[in-house]
Length: 142
Image (cartoon, rainbow, N blue to C red; front, side, top):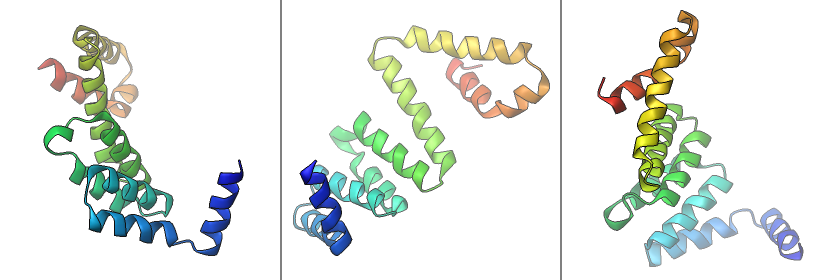
């Protein structure tokens, strides 16, 4: 509780202090942890587009499928108003999570259920959900 109050006071007195620290840390040592800390600070400082770039730069090599990084990217994309990319990131996360949980069959069943419901739904529903319907068809190879 006290730490939160001190952090708020510190941010009020010098709003860019944490950003300067995070930038310096990332420049000195561009590790994944330092980039993530800088990206989080970018989000806190209303710079989500920069945060998204940082998260994307981390999604390489051993970290290419890291769900924590992808959740950070999703948050940044959404905050930046980049809803198409955020949707794509969310779809990828859902697919990755179901497969990682050994529920690939469950994912396929959900896609089939979505398509079945769409076929029985009125046209306005199909139009409103067209992107999800296309995504389900892609996943099923339909």
